Length: 273
Image 1 (cartoon, rainbow, N blue to C red):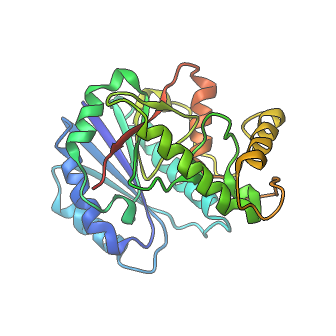
Image 2: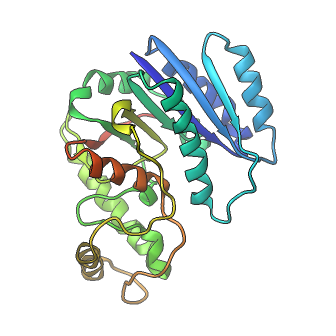
């Protein structure tokens, strides 16, 4: 099995050494591992650390992309650009690989990885095409869409926090109620780490701009549901304009639209201790 791992890097010096350690552990699972760093303009020594890591691990195919463009006004537009650039390199050089992993370079993935958990799910790959993992406190509500929750929370303005709390409790309960080898299917999820069967990413791109992926009726159903169930909201919940959306949502919904049978799953297992 072969795997290509992609990491966006910006001002991550504090956590990179621990992330590097996890990358070397992941490398042990595969016959061939390639790593692509998408470096964005930083104010720390992240770039120096990337080159040191590359020079110290010549047995691994490592690519460092340096984004010299002027930063976009919005963070998700910038992440969309760097992630899609890495994906272009993936398709150009590694399209024959089995897996694509994308992992964050900050504190989220800097604690020790439980490689046995990752191996367990790779061995069980017939039950998923895209897989992300749980956390002691599920933090990444920004990338999460499932069931009736079909629109991102940052469009909810002053009601964002009570909605986050509600969805965080809901996903926690759903994951905790899974059986040992059961998965929870979603429209989108990330939580700092995702593993993909690479064949499902052909002609698929990240999108940090598009706001709506579901019908007006489904979005309104979500709003009505939240108004009936969320406590401590300041006012009636309604959608406000936003220039950003989580880039992972665009990627995952594009996969669903192209491959009707794609299984985007979350496991109750926690990957990083």
